[in-house]
Image 1: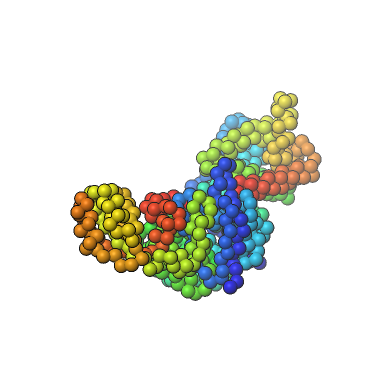
Image 2: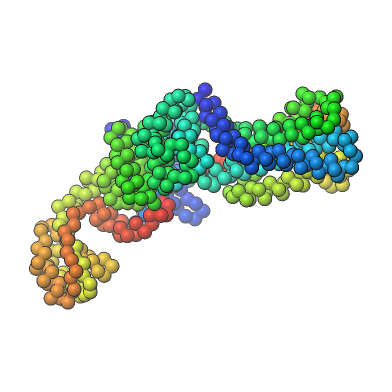
Length: 245
Length: 321
């Protein structure tokens, strides 16, 4: 019970100190709105395009929302030594890192609701498999957050975390089938697409919203879950190796 | 006496630099133990190894019988740590910071609020309780960081340079608090650059230089060889070099050392007669400014044992050891 008291208070502290700050709230709302508007205008297909754009916009909103926050909640706290206070507390490193990432996961899920809310305003959202959509949103948020964690513990400066994030995020947008089918990628780039966790999350969303998934959904769920576990385990190992030297 | 820390041959190497070298010592329950050494001596690295924030290259340490390398979380439950920089959360208020730190140890909501209020009161920070930590002065930040270190009433407290870089009044208040905590039974491991602070507060002191403990003894034992010494310090404007050699011939019972060319320190096992000495110095061409008797202190022991001057210690006060 005591460890869960610590867990929830770390999460609440992060939400209060970081996620509920006006710049982050505006980032969380404006960014998905901008993405949605941009792709909607670019498609030139009117309201009909909303449904086809939704999986990509939802994924991208989660990806950018989560990965950006970890640079602050982890790298910044490590830099100013307040993270040492958490490392010295009597809760396991696994639970501590879960507490530090839970805020970003929730933030990412909230980001996902913005384009869905916008879509609901303009068009009927009938025929959606909501169970799969919610599961995909959760898994994309977890995978993106753990990717942000992996980046945050691999660097020592906040600006490095942000730069490193962009090196991964922007190619990922074009490689993981968000807006262009993987089948349309050049042959040499396709293996890279399958090495990205977002590919599987987006595929679940394509299946749940458009019934156009390229892989069986069960395979997508397994693949993205494996990525989540791997990214978390590697990040924990990096914390042990780099921060408790 | 019961041991609360047992460090055995602790060593830490960063690439080619041996930061801590075979450090072995015990700390007994209820003691206030001082780790005294200059910048870069290995004080902070030792604390990091003892608290589980760094892995020893060699050796190990037990906290109340718990191996810190093997069971860090069980050991960390027993300790409070006040690092050399005030590392609380700038965006939280003083009260919120303390309540948050209490929650890390699983304290219940009401219990942590009461404890936070008590500590704010004890550290004279009540008026600033609802102000953000980032608005605090250095001294207030330091006090709140110490309060956060003892929020869960740990039996063992690590204090890394607690008075470095803060104003005189806050430093004095912090020393009083350290003394009070010690009197209430908390075992304290204190690192400091300040010789007087160590002498005033500690039961036992270890001198650490270049990663090695070169002396570890109770303060009374450290002072024993010099406690009956008589020391006279004479400031001269010029002529100290010439005078020093002639004094050695005329007063062979005195040992003389000249510091920075302007301060001559005479030491003897019997009372030093001031007038004949000054007369002789002036006759030797030295221009005497003033003379004062000095009570032998830990500084003299430190200089003898380490070969370092107090100034070398004090100049390193803003660095990390």
